[in-house]
Image: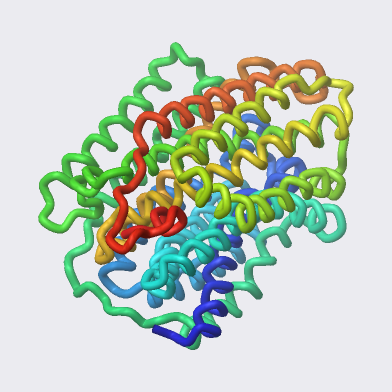
Length: 476
């Protein structure tokens, strides 16, 4: 095991990786109106700047986790940074909608290698010390939603004072530093051998996810009663069923289906899926409300969400570990989901002539507290349930769950918002009604998440030697 100081420096790089790959989902939020004007996006298709990244990210995460197990986490970690760097250059220099979406998809592919390998490296560094693992997971977990909300703030600064392409260029120096630091800080680990890679499984799950998101996003334009809508959604279901069939038949599948028989793993991943499905639509539409209804420019819009970032950081690093110790992981997931739903329900009451202090700040802080409490215990339960040799797979599954939930949740809430008037630019009353409908829909997703966690999660059995509650979250 690396020295203590080296391990914590390595954790800094792992947390930075998580921060960047999640920040890249949100940093474009404030820049979207400028990108729509410069590149010619329609209001309905604007969410594809987000979805192109998330579909590639979520669809390829299982492959990224499998490659991490087969060829070594450190090698895949470095490869992911190189691909993310290339995608950032393409997205920043894009002069058309297709090129922009291509760059975002390449970024997502790089992130799909970084995220599971980073989590695997964290387990390699701290898996032998449960108490340290709990602390490491807290820092890692805080980096994800903090990256999401901090991305909005940073995106506002860049869009206001530089130009929107720099929301992509900001990745370049970070990627260079990561590529230089990885050989010195990260353990090499042992590759799992040159087993065959399930390319068919990777292709079907990515195509199925993409078809599902596209069908839901396009439905408001072509109609929910359109044959095209239902053909696309039927194709998505067929592709995802084909993925399951491929996994059941292959000797070395991309995702061993039996892994979901592991206690708590399925429930924790479903909680992560629903958490992403509720959280991402919230920040997406809250940012649009600030800009398109309250009239905030890019920088004030980003700054308005900074209190959420601070609360999430404090909540995940300080409050969540204490609460898990005191009340247990399951209770915190349920409580966090309920608070998240309450915050979004409060946001749905926002007025077309509202103010930040009344209509945004208090409700967003309630939602942020809920996210802080739910994220760490559901993540820790998911990754600690799998066998050590399947660490990359477990990391890929939990990251996939969150990203799939994010993509489908945003796609569904985009459709809901459009159906209630959010596609009528310039009409503040219609926009507010549409955004409120999206907040209510996201709140319902969080409520379902709370019910799922209450029904599916159970307290881990005590381990020999009398592990304390914090250790149970990381009990492998």
